[in-house]
Image (cartoon, rainbow, N blue to C red; front, side, top):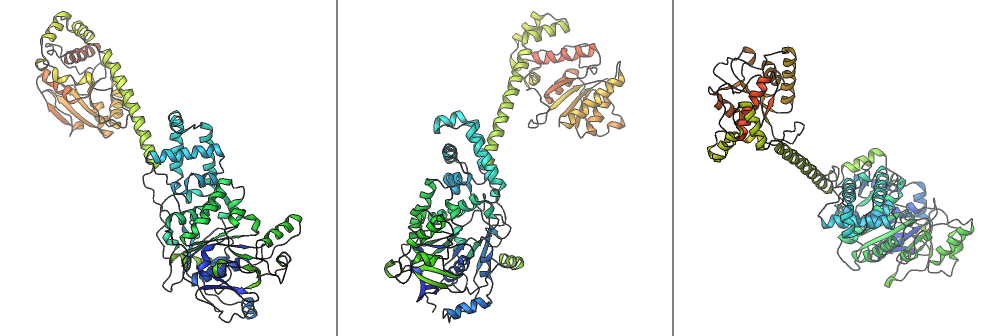
Amino acid sequence: MLLDDKIYLGQSTHPEYLALKYGNRHGLVTGATGTGKTVTLQVMAEGFSSAGVPVFAADIKGDLSGVGKMGKAQGWQTERATAIGFTDFKDDVFPVIFWDLFGRRGHPIRATISEMGALLLSRMLELNDTREGVLNIAFKVADDEGLLLLDLKDLRALLVDLQERAKEISTRYGNVSTASIGSIQRALLVLEQQGAENFFGERALDIADLMRTDRDGKGFISIPAADELMRAPRLYATFLLWMLSELFEALPEVGDPDKPKLVFFFDEAHLLFDDAPKVLVDKVEQVVRLVRSKGVGVYFVTQNPVDIPETVLAQLSNRVQHALRAYTPREQKAVRVAADTFRPNPDFSTAEVITQLGIGEALVSLLEDKGVPSMVGRTLIRPPSAQVGPLLPEERRAIIANSPVAGLYDTVIDRDSAFEVLAAKARDKQLAEERQQVEDERSKVERTYQEPKATRLHAAITGRGGDEFAGAHRCQSTGERAGARHSRWPQARPLMMNDNTAATPVLAVFASDKGPGDAERASLMSQTGTYFARRRARIICPVEKGVIPVPLITAARAAGGHVQLIADASIVLPSALAGVAMEVIAEPAERIGRVAQLADAPVALPGSLASVSNLFGVWTAVRAGAELPGGDAQPAQGL
């Protein structure tokens, strides 16, 4: 009864066999709900598996999972085997791999956005022609600019980038409107809410993992859980079509092999074609027609042949038709269409028998020698050998844990792709804008301190003639100027203390705890020390004549800041400042020169008008490159 090169499906007036060498010629299993399509699908899957052919079959209701458990013949199975004379019937079990797009009831299945392609993704998003055109432009830009599109966040980031560059993109590739971008983004949000974020990404499914055989030579039956997926029919249909396209792209040409390399079952196939645009139907027809030469058999499972477009239906040579009910004129027409797809049998009217078939009966027409369809026969389908009905959850989990692909797809891989590249590009652009802003601010500051103003200010403070000072300055070369090494202050860029990207600034803080308003001054110094320290500034404090801004130093240190003192020989640190770094320089000019050498910019906390004048006199002299004024014009602690 069982043959090595054929699959036994059941008994009509003779045994009905599906020849393995014609298994890649595709097929169709149809019939109303409850007429036995799932059992027929299981029988065919078991037959291919026994012959060493891997199978991929979506499990809509969960019933197909029973192939992974040793059968225990029920009464109806034994009775049917006896009725058709199936003497080789025995219980059996088959190797199974469970998959799940959502990763809950099987190993995760993932694909990248790039692998899906613009056509299938447009189908999934239900885009009109205009928006599909924009999506095609997005994919073209990604190809031209070397951007990897792996998951949904990559595609979203690319669409945002296209919107920001709309004028440039429209000139090079075609019109890209904000409205179209917004519509695609909304469609992506709907898709994400249906669980598509679990599908798009890496590690992407390796087709080779669908084409495994076990140690006994049986082909693995890959079963994706589709009960939850059915709530997102667009995702389900596009996923199956993507699988078929990937098989076509990945497999080599083999012509007509002795048996298929893989058999693919499309359950609820009508979902693939409902409201499908012609371009997508053409794509399905093309893949179905060409994938045969890759050794892949495709079998559509649906309720009625009219669910399948005629151009695709013409490619399906092996037919199993279960009962159809015809209560309305439309249903009666569907029965006549179904009957006309079979090679007639003179012993009965095919159209009449279709409505009379019982559960487990079917009209069967399969390819015979030389690839000619057999005459349709009224067939009682053989019983499956494995368990009929779903596995228990714990049984499913045990199979998943011992699967040959256990652990391969469980962890999401998120490598650098379009999202990361475009995010880095946006950060670089922002930093460039901030640098330009700082540069503009610097230029503004430099324009404020032009040399004539500095010269006049110095002359006003020191009493020396502006012309005399300017002449002396002009007579000195850069290397001869006494204060040339201090020119870093005027040229330093403005210090933006809220700029987290800036290097650690070094500030020379002139402050004193002496003078009127001591309490207010102490509070100001404490706040200043805390503020600078928390923003990572290093503080250089010039101190002399026994005057030390203790509140400033202690507050900065308490906030984790670094303080260094440039002091004269009179300074003795109190115990509260133990451990503070201090450099003693006796000469005032050398002391202020050292401060200017270390610091990026001076900061003044005024205590009196005299101290303000003193600081600006020193600073102006340093800036102009002149000799430091002598006498009373020395760095002041009151500033």
